[in-house]
Image 1 (cartoon, rainbow, N blue to C red):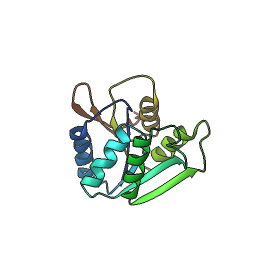
Image 2 (cartoon, one colour):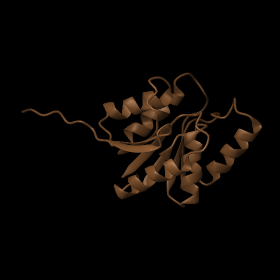
Image 3 (cartoon, one colour):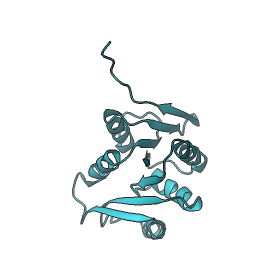
Image 4 (tube, rainbow, N blue to C red):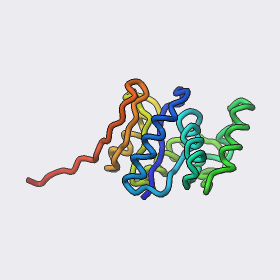
Length: 160
């Protein structure tokens, strides 16, 4: 089974929550993790995956994803990428929509969504969680505001 991470960019350090998500994913049989390598939760999750020596794939939206980042952010990004089990680059360069295409790719190729998500109605994490819901994926959510973990199972329509 495969799982992917989504979350907010402005979360500083919530490794305990990420570890909880990973533990719950492993309990469900996940053996492969997808990571979009964005700033924030994605890179924190990459650090935890590396620390735990788990198999993960960096799903990079475009070759120059880091083009607007600071030197320090670029160096950290390149260092994390060295430890990825696999790397997939979806587009050769940035164009509008590549970040959303990356998220769609991860949803399409995953069985579970691991979300560090506080319930905001806007932003990339919200869009990706809603996309996972639309694709009937279970969502394991860690709320960084309440520090609570929840599992949101897909709803199945009943004919009766």
